[in-house]
Length: 465
Image (cartoon, rainbow, N blue to C red):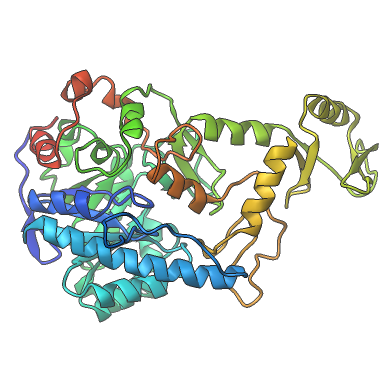
């Protein structure tokens, strides 16, 4: 393993090792501060981050607004206070070492307002902002206003080209690095395009090389690229280190930091990670964002898969093979299925899946009365955590809607991510993880259920393991 050379990132020489920012309260000030204290880069999540009461307990994010727009205003206020709080914790834990970054999703509700609020309230505590999930054109302008470096997350050279030509070239001095996140291997939301096959992962090297060549053409030859997604042992990436074709490279770890003493996730979640097997992380498209995402195939994901499988196409009028009349709703208004699909539908109803829900794509899904009630309550209780939500049909526009039917095949992502990060329930909630998570079970570093400190993990990473 080649020795890792420090890189200048966000104005300071640091180890080229970065903690990936993960969801609601999954990477926080404690974990990111520890990464910075070890001379690396820590990243806390700015997505609905926790704030605390005087006794140190997380403040419950309860919503009292009568409308979605009112509840979103509450969510934005929670998020700003939480982001400031986590920045303060990270700063204290870092002891003035390393760098502290905040991660946000561009498609999260109130993203620009939250970013302004946190950067204003935590001046000089945050050194960089990483941002993905969408095309964050305005991230450069906002970060430059606060003299903070920005780190766009992309999955292709083409995506970076669009961002650079539209906006980033005006704020090139504050571009700290470009994060290439592998859309097949990373955990959480993935940047697969419609032209890419989710079942056929591509080698990241040619894609990152194309990104470097694109960056070089823009005069960014010395701007680091951060490789994210699928990184476990650095000895597997030796050819990338000091590679003149790739230029300066840093490595981001999203999944391995989950299993550290400073990681805030529940012990039940940590034990679950130690038991995963190859293939247990499932690339799916159930997220209300519309993006692909990678999550552990637990009972939560299994229920969504089964719900989606209990699905038939329908027409409002008999056409072609869709001639079998099928009553839907309290009034039994007819729609038309093919005879075969009507038989399947009647079988599901006989099995107890008696509630029939329409989707935006002219299909019907069949669920139990209890599940239908939960879906409806979650849709009604939407707090606008996304800029546009497939599940509830909320959108950040004047109408407050996407203009489409709410999709019962999806779920309330804010509810489940809050639940898994504040409880021991890692079977019935959404559990994001990278596709390499199964390696915890056979990595000798974690033998006997060993859970390292962040400092011990970073020492280990530098050896190549």
